[in-house]
Each structure stands twice: as C-alpha cells, then as structure tokens.
Amino acid sequence: MYHFPRLIRSVIFIVDSSLKFDKNISLIVHKAMNIEQILPDTEMFSDRVLLTKAFCTYVRPILEYCSPVWSPHFKYLITKIEHVQIYFTKRLKGCWNMPYEHKLITLCLESLKHRRLVTLVYQILHGHYDTELDATFVLSTTLELEVMPINY
Image (tube, rainbow, N blue to C red; front, side):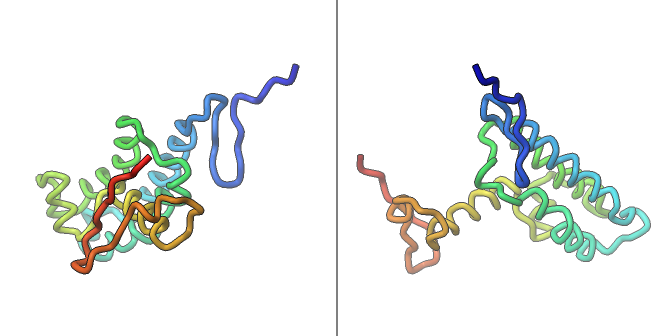
C-alpha cells in the first residue's frame, strides 16, 4: 500500500494530506513579515506614502501570489494573513490610534480579503478561468458589479 507524504511542497504552495493550506499560509505570512521588517523604521522615516508604496511593492505581492488557489475560508486564516497589513499600518507615524478601517482609508489601501475577492472576480470576468461562472457576473453600465442568481 502506498502512503502519501504528509506534506507536498510544489514550487507554488504547500498542501498537507488533508488538502489544507494552513502550512502554506503560515509560510507566506512568515516570509511577508520578514520582508516587512526590512522596511525602514517608521519612527525615523515618516513618509507614509513612500512606506505604503514599499509595502505594496515588496510585501503585498507575497501575500497575493496564487491566492485564488489557496484563498482561506476559515476566519483564523483570513485574520492571520490580514495581520501582516494590520501590523504594517500600526507602525506608521500618525496612524497609531486609528481603527484599522480608518487607516486603510487614510492610506488608500484595501483589506487583503477584499483584494483577493476582487482579483478572483476580475479573473473570472476576463476569462482567465475555464468556468461557467462568468455568466453569473454581469457588469452594469454604472461600473457596479451585479451578481445574477445561479439556476441549477
């Protein structure tokens, strides 16, 4: 009898034997936090715009790479990924006492959960997936997304 390995690591992501991506998400968060630590200390470097661009350039792509494949649906995993951006916004001068949602508005950022959803919908709408879901999404003329009911 063949025994499957407990972890399968591909070039893109890690999957355990129960097809969960917990270890993959932990690795991604660890890698993103390491890179975020390299960003200049925000107490000495107060340009929020430049630091936000650095975060979006060097850290966020790590958190979003292949996210439609491993996108979490458990709240604790969503929070674990979002924590990287929460930690970054806590370090910024002038944002220490703001709620997270206000920090996102101030810095012109979106939550990572929202970005994963928008990316997935965009890819479905533009035919990057071989699926019949593209008929479910219809773009309205007011640039709002309407979701049509699925008939089975």
